[in-house]
Image (cartoon, rainbow, N blue to C red; front, side, top):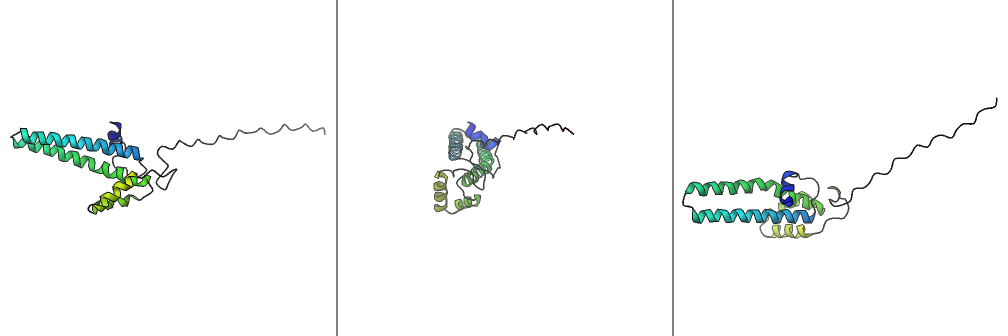
Length: 147
């Protein structure tokens, strides 16, 4: 459940930084399962309920769910594009029917760029330790003058 909640709670509309492949795909998997479960519940209510008000309420909840997740889904796509070294504007390829979505799908399968890129450090890179502070060396003792 962490993979679904983390992008929503901590990176809801965060288009900066990088998201590694594992985090991206686990979020998409959890989002898809949640969406499918919601759709199944909606269909069960459609076939079992005869009251229009119940159907409207469930459909409204489904619509709110879709709209609430729209921004995090776009944001995680953009951060994943940053992780492979592309600008987030490449996400607009999704608006080209069939071919654009296929290109984006293939791009999401690419491995992360090693090390840092212009969008930030690698998310799984170990933290670089700071160099130790120099130890002050005391000046040598001065010799007493004989004068």
